Length: 458
Image 1 (spheres, rainbow, N blue to C red):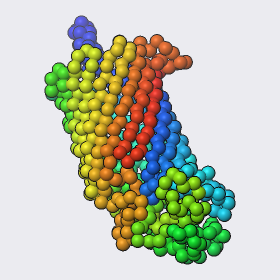
Image 2 (cartoon, rainbow, N blue to C red):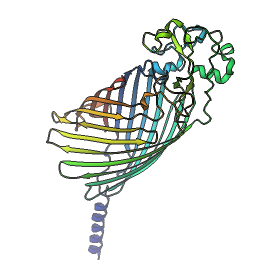
Image 3 (cartoon, one colour):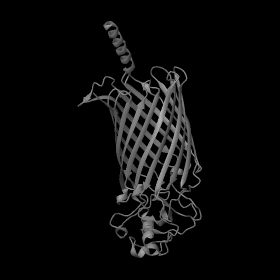
Image 4 (cartoon, one colour):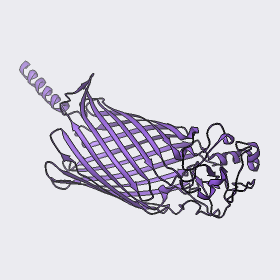
């Protein structure tokens, strides 16, 4: 009897051991440190109504920490901060902080020294994921928060991934919602008009500042009567996506996806100016520069806005695309991507890209890449001084214009699977460096650099 009990206990222990043994989803805590730098220049500033300097520089950093809670669950924290300076946004108020009467040379072609020339964005998100025992089912949920001077965003969402066919097929669905709030900042002349009405040139920020007509004569006739402050300042965004990934052969993997996105609320940008072709022009600054206003020879005059940007309160978008990865040989893999986009503002767009990771050694990989993009113009876009005042919606933001763009890049990855380099209790797993150059047919160009480090907590 004692022997029988011992055998039963031993079998139970074996079964229990077999049932509980499984590979952890994440073996160790991982820490990613990401740094990036971006700079651009162009001649179609939306803040200045479609002309002027688009110089901008941005420095951003993120720390992502993925913590295994147990064999099945992972909790990921992502905290980021970025700081930028922008010639374009500086001209929300083209004067310095001392006021319009102290301004010497307001112009859309140079950055002002006012407070709006720079800002910071802080963001944080938390993601929780759970894997089933057989690793064929994955659930995840996330929440996020970001804030800058005039904008706050709160987001939440979740998703589910199913693997089957011996993990050769993967189906994922996801949904997200972002509940955002503007704190609208209007161009300085429109803010003063909203506060003081027709008398703002005599009682407000512009008191004692001469206003000039197109011919350089002084005038008191400037009246942006089309302007009204926004009644609603919320912007809500909802998205749902589905993707299917299939391993077709030993060398080819295909995935297809479709997203549905709906935005509601304040979708225009409050500080982006619009100028009407059927309204007289009025300026502040040095009248001698009026004849060359829309060229970089303008060193000291600024045109007062007719209105701010106006766009519909709903925006529906559908992107559909595919990725095809092809294993060429042990040294090279081709990663290709295509996406078609359409929305109810009249934009249709195509994106195509290719990346070729090339294995240089067991530790080093280089990956050149190229991305091509083209889009049609929005129904509501027109260049500087091409809108008319009877239109319901209008914008001179060249992001909504017809254009094509090209992006060229090169990246390098160093991987140490043994994490031999140590920084305190962190072992260095990989280093990733990427450099990209971006050009757009409307004259915008940019350079992007990023550097990432992945560590393991041992």
